[in-house]
Length: 404
Image (cartoon, rainbow, N blue to C red; front, side, top):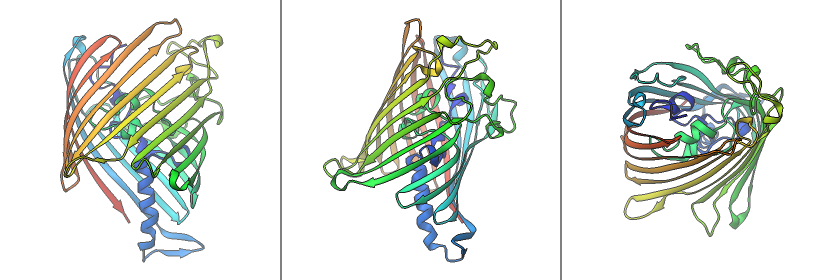
């Protein structure tokens, strides 16, 4: 199957990084982690809060609002129906509500397209819906936290780290694990000269509750009756991850390792038929990533390299289906200017032994204004399922942090 028109990511994943809404139980990403840390620190500066029995009233809230507008113009494609112009928006509201210095609620909302554009037809701000991206309750003490609620699983990190307009798209669309409910915990430890590390794990299942139903849309939410990997009766799926950095001999180096096991109890095709049991398998996912925090080059010019490999065995719950994804990027920063080079190559092997190789490459440049507005322009070349397309893109984003 070729890429659905110009914006397969608009139908399946957020270009603004949905994993920023990461559920603490299953692995908060770096951006959300920093917002939470900032909130905990700022509690000491809230002089008007009334504390009773260890609780803060009114609660202290810290978060951010992002509003984005995107234009994808696919000007060349093997399939003429993919040569369209797609203008769509993506907005995100995330907040940490501190009930005490150790207890907080994380919540996140997304407004984004829920359907791909209709083949051969331009689109202007259509098929958007409001979705609940995260809702969790966390207790934290020192280097330990435990949490329960809804959000994405801490698997790959390219979705929130790969730079550029299109750099994170393949990760977001094809192997990010979103919309799960579960329980998890994290333990951080300091290894001295060998850096700081965090081990986290959780159990989960696909969210098929009312929280998964988009607002202002007739888009069908996930259903238990469709089955598939991770769509289990109970918290039968699990994830574990190890993240770290701060090693004395490798300043700036950070790593990520993860494994996810998703059970496949059954799988129903769109026509309603069940896939035979001997054609199903429990899905095993592995991911490894490394990055080097900004490396100073000359003057105020710096570069951040990033590489991630993710592998899915029995992918999507289909026995002997294998998918492998390799993402690499360079993010150059000069004052308020940025230049992002990113590429993702991926191979899919189906149960019958056939293979397809795919590649997306992008280059984009941007400028961040003092008022928080970022403007980017970029180019993407995509080869998917032996079909080629080229897209020119524009992105305008405004981010407003808040605390009260």
